Length: 205
Image 1 (cartoon, helix red, strand yellow):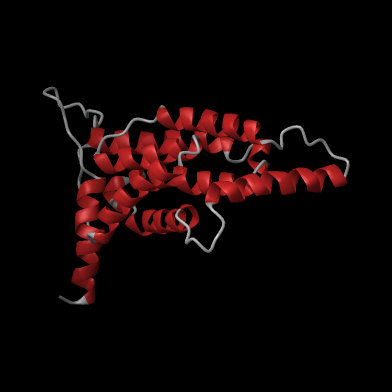
Image 2 (tube, rainbow, N blue to C red):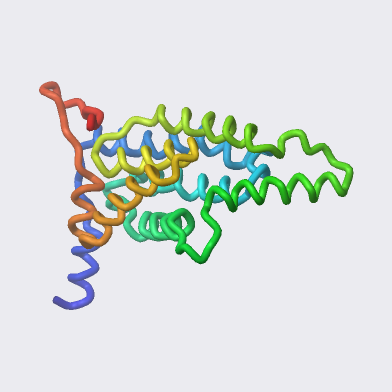
């Protein structure tokens, strides 16, 4: 197969039904609403490590559902995010555990701004817990239409609630699909079900 035919095979539209295409695109757009606003709010500075991982985790569902006919689940983008998050959260024993690192960063940020006589009221672990929970609650409002989308959203919800190991369970499920290769990943990422009237149905685990 020459390069042109290979390119045609890779970039050929999936021709998903219009209502499926629309539902996936609306999902991608919803993620860019309230959930996105949380990671750019002032409270994101409580712990930059936490908010940075939040940003990448929530972006998985956006990349996965954005224009599925063309991006086909966005494997290239999703893979970078998933592997980056796994490296950040599941650390080798020689490195500080992720949650300890987050807590230390809060203390360092509080000390930094105290020395500069700035308001430091938000720099506390309880505030971080509330911040993460609010973001997780917004992520939980997103609909999902297949199992990979469900894993992506669940990873974000558990990360927001500081349940690192459960978040990792979902990220590793995404990694399994990525490791299966482009064709299998695309099949799973663009999977959908229609009811008897032809409307797309939400995924239920």
